[in-house]
Image 1: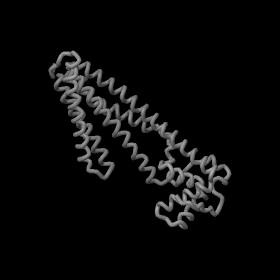
Image 2: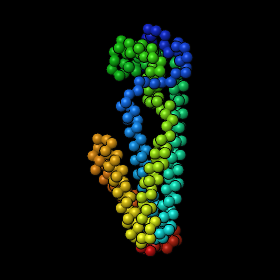
Image 3: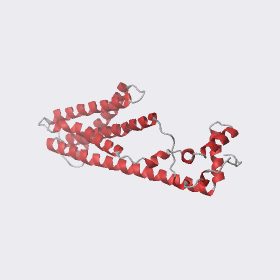
Image 4: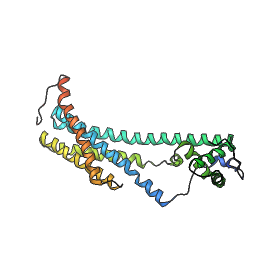
Length: 268
């Protein structure tokens, strides 16, 4: 940081009446709003993928351990309900905690700006010098920023804490519902074959096929939202999912005998 304390050409934010009530903000754009909506794909992909992997792991393990149709279906449906609720509540509480942390950081920055306005002004000048601007250019930029208190506060919080202050005002609950709903849909796929009266082996194979198709679809969708090849992205998730299913199957086959339960052949 610079050891000099450049003076602003006009009163800094602290001298603006009512500045304590401002919220950090920057001009919005259609592109930014579009990206914000597209980022919901993160919750959808994560929820559906976790639902398939978790429930298929349960179905595969319980199916290999018990060989009982009803037991597998009940275990899968319970995993669906508990998992969806857990994911939704976890997403909501996690986002709420993040908002509280960001708000605390904003209030901390406001307190520092009120107690040491010249130091904070000089600090922002130093940040712009680190970005490649000359001392005169940085001083000019910050002088322009102080004319717009909400943008000045936004820049201070972003540069000092490395966070997006807009998180503090984002109370949207859609991500929580998105991740819970996508988890439920993903979880239901491996359970479907155990609802009709199929043989245990056929149901287990059909469950695995549906789960892998679901994983590929999730990967393809996620890849199509980026510059990655969607086919490769889909196959990548299928590969990881196959590993999870294989380990779950082996656990269901060999852990019960270690605990004194009888070994159950596939097919009943």
